[in-house]
Image (cartoon, rainbow, N blue to C red):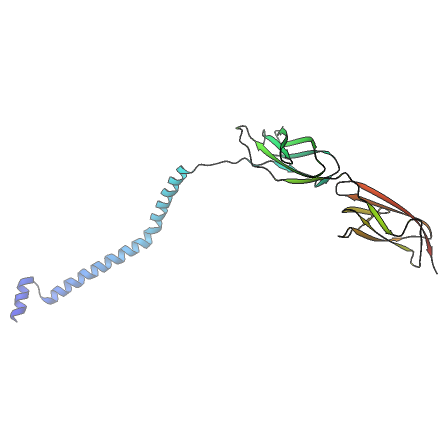
Length: 243
């Protein structure tokens, strides 16, 4: 009993009162912690956006905007031709200077009109494979990157036609009034026999069944390659219908 009175005088309160006060302080601290956590969840996105915006604005001032010139576009470029000189056309921005490059070096220049269209006339090619591309230069003398590169094959030789069957001046005899024509062309071509389209196989051979009547038969074979070179082969045979 003496000890309790001594503590009461020393601290001015009983142990029970001291415990209550301590619990209140702990509850206050816990409440403050909970409030801070909730505040972080609620306001963190807003603060983050604000800091992000400031960061973006700061970076925007530091960034240097580079505007690239659009390369010109060549249109309707042939993959193969039999002409040693060809015309090329395309489009780009209005008023630009267009440079044409063939097999490496620049070979011609022209300027686009109000519609952005440009033309190159009589561009000379070499026999075989040719590479072609163009660049654009604007009024500030800024040059674009190279546009699409095209490959053009200059082929001046006509395809060769070989007919394996039937042979010229031969006689064909059978029951069905048909002649089977078999042969080969030296390169990929468009084929016609007596005016009708014939399919060329991947190995460049062809086979076609022609309906005929008894008597003399003329077989005309035409082959046109991708460059436009054309060959013709005519075979004359005699057909006899057997009984």
